[in-house]
Image (tube, rainbow, N blue to C red; front, side, top):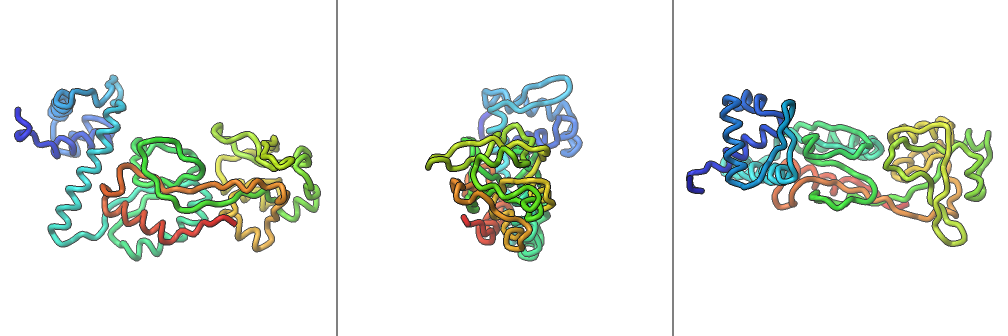
Length: 303
């Protein structure tokens, strides 16, 4: 079969449906095809590309590394085709479902307040928002854009920086009245230091000691899964917490939280990025519109 006889966009659409629906039978139902026809098409695609796209078992299909790359690029190509068709029809407004994943503090403090304005500007986009502090796989969770705090690992993801924030150790006035205000880093040993139960989180807080940054143990009686819960516990007077300033700035301004040990604060910045699959020049209109809207409206500055 010559390359001219191959319906490559059709193959990509079937392949993408298999990935996103999690199996041959589900894709066959969605495409009004038989499972055997879908299986044969995927087999022909693998033979033509010369790579295995799926690892097959009796229960599930799992993408190979080559399959993940091909899926990512197929989604881009199909999105470009759809945009080209909409543009030719003089109806190029961003539309469709947009899946967004964000860490809880950013979601509550910055993302959710922007939703009304975004939907007013783009009424044909449907938002699907998940807030979690767990780092997800965008392909596995079928996510268009994720917002991540902290250093980014090298990957196939593209990132747009939304800002950077300092972090501070804070506590409620009630907690400080009951337990005293720490005056030096060593005082943390006698305080209840709240933390995260995520294994990827550093076990300790950075402070300045003799002009150098060191990591001190931060031990307490409560650990939580996300920054928003940590912030609420600190406001409730349970203990000290180290929080991003953009997340707790309203609590500090209102006197619900008080920064402590600031002269020992190393001033390290936590960068916040929106990450997505593909290159900025090959994005569905809805994704590009959302990214541009975030960059335009999110205000996260070192304080």
